[in-house]
Image (cartoon, rainbow, N blue to C red):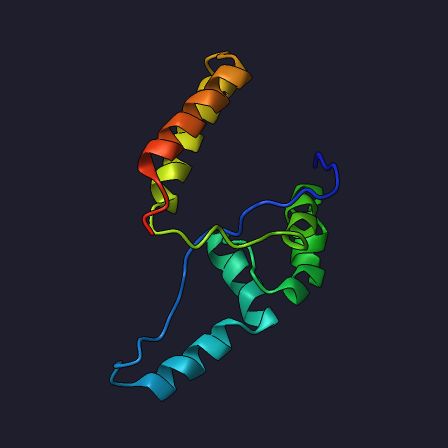
Length: 127
């Protein structure tokens, strides 16, 4: 994994929540607590191949035995949440598109980055 000071990436994947007006809040919180157990995270990975979010799950042999997975486990140690802007998904989509143009289409990285910045400026933060 390339790294200068850090190889930080964004945490991704699904999000789970319990709404304040949920009818069964206590049961929902218990369910989320169960989902967050390392052994459940490992079993979920073995069932559907979703990578664990709980770092201690990464010590399980089901994950440590695969060198490719070890890269993701190491990267998780420096992962950060995306910026808390309402328009982040729009900006992220622009970035994804331009990165693909560089990697697959051979576009100039500096030109692609300039396009990303221009479009991000036009989209704004939504605040």
